[in-house]
Image (tube, rainbow, N blue to C red):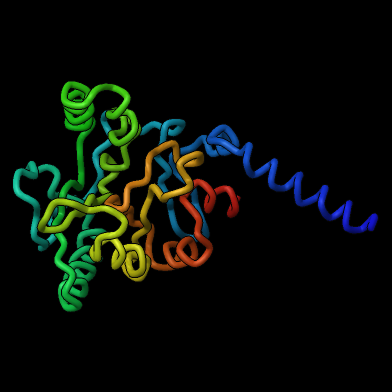
Length: 220
């Protein structure tokens, strides 16, 4: 009986701790750049801001279809990301999944414009949920690409989103803002937001259900 009581208390304490975790628990991640083995990983969020003058090297436009109305700047990503995106899009199409690029690189200025436009159209609360403030956006790194489908309706239960969630890691991508991890990332779930980290890290994160902050915390 005593063992059962002790076990119950321990389980209760663990559950209490998990329930009370929040983004402050991950504020120890204070740098934008981390070395994991030989890999350099950028972590951009509300606590780690990127310099307004930062422009990625080797920005190119991948050979993928884009959604109508995408600004030319947003068609760009880092060269390594572009190569992986092309493979992902091609393999997806071969299985009957048709994807469109929706937003890649955004300069500090474009991010500022995007954020302010969302405030005007939907209000500040909605803007803060789905659009990063300038200096806090992964899009400025050139390592991210938002994707969508032909219906421009990309929710977690669409076949395209399901395929992405099951296969993105094979091409070096993670779903940066996962469902149920909002208390860590500080962002709402976005099944369309792909972030390139390389196959090895992406596979590790996928298999262990980790977001980037958790992965960095575990590796440091």
